[in-house]
Amino acid sequence: MGMKQFATFYAGDRYLGIDVTRVQEVIRSQSITRTPLAADEIRGLINLRGQIVLAFDLRRRLGLPARDDGVPPMNVVVRTHEGLVSLLVDRIGDVLDVDEDLFEEPPETLQGDARDLIRGAYKLDDELLLELDTDRALEVVA
Image 1 (cartoon, rainbow, N blue to C red):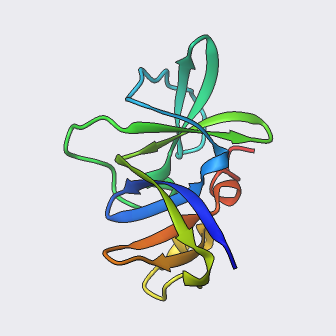
Image 2 (cartoon, rainbow, N blue to C red):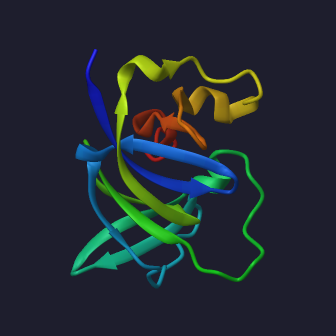
């Protein structure tokens, strides 16, 4: 097998990655305009240089508690079939090249909705990288 390249980030204590080709950009916290009657995971809309982008709370989608440290989330702007979506994450990691031979099924410790959103895991030297299924995670949006 070969190498896969991931853009990585954190949601709670989860170290997550998505295919780097899906990421348009990573930006600091933006002003979010709330959207009434939207799904719980949708925090609102951000203005990205004149383009309106949906802001999606990844913590909520993964069943994690809301942040209580007062630090605003970062935005990982990803490309979808419907356009751009901003994943709100706690902090940004690095772009990693990972050997596909390290791929394993999602760990048994991952329960509930989160387990359905993870394609698998890569055991790295110091952390467990969970590959997020971006399309499935954003299904609530479609």
